[in-house]
Image (cartoon, rainbow, N blue to C red; front, top):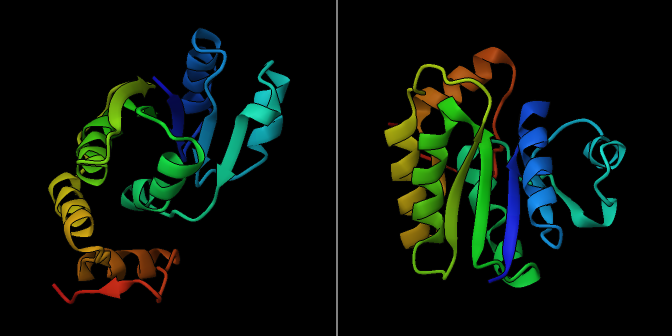
Amino acid sequence: MRKLILHLGGDTRRAEKCIELANLYPDTPILVSSEGGDMLKYYSDRGINPDRVYIDMLAWDTVTNFTATLKRVKKEFRARKVFVVTTDFHMERAMKIANAVYWMQGIRPVASPSGPPSNKEKYVRQDQMRAWIYRLTGFLFYWKSVREEREKSGMGYPKKWNEIGL
């Protein structure tokens, strides 16, 4: 079974979990989604061949970590099993989104948490719904409250993406 390690953007604890998996599965590539900094160097400095590490900067949140990389996961890597690496508090949300996006794609997501547990995120149900709507219709949108919160923080959001004023 072709495997892939999907490193969802975040801190280096996630990279450490990816390295652990990479050492267990030495032929498995690592796809880093939305990670700042020089992750190729980070992995290389820890003994992972940079030829195994791929960077994808198209995503900017958890839903798009999966929607933006879906074509690569299917076509470039032809992965049938994807180890999803994120922190424990983020895993429930990530796996609900992964299951929605990968549904009927022949891809089995496997939770591979890293980091200490924390409080559950408030957008789990909303993002799960967004992921299912994307999977069933190809329509990707943001809730008005999320857009407003991101604008207040200065993060903004991609204007090219669909918007719903809910």
